[in-house]
Image (cartoon, rainbow, N blue to C red; front, side, top):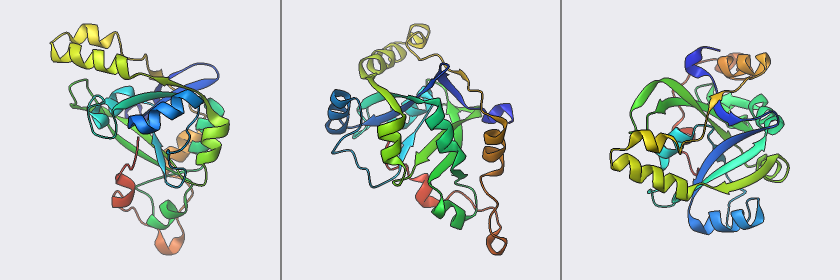
Length: 211
């Protein structure tokens, strides 16, 4: 896969860390349980992001209403790769996107100041039919990164970027199996002949309903 579209993440031999941001009403019960519980919604797609910096851009460093708490979700690599094996790019045929259990899109990676960079960060949308599996079988632990995020944001605002960077999680290229690299390059299973086309980003898919 082209270097501009490599998955970069904090990972070890068995797990990978992805990030989400929620309101305290969702984050606090989840942290106590070590899994997502109500009022977390199991009835709509949930988006996970291996890029810490992209979520900082998305949540405005945990300042955006409803995204004030940043969680590091450590999940199994087996689960992450299972999700990708079911994924369809949001740029694929709309009918294929509608049927897919998992959506994937690539967005420009961001600098700490929010500037778009020349490589891309993967966003993985886990559909409602797979969320229970994600929650019950794939999640290893949840960690509240909010204090770390707020400290880093304060350092950046004070012009101390070098100190802020020390608080960022270490991310490196994630070694995807060749079959998954090919899937993410092609966009998933071939579209039906009658609807084979390359559509622009789906408006619905582009609305990241939660983080």
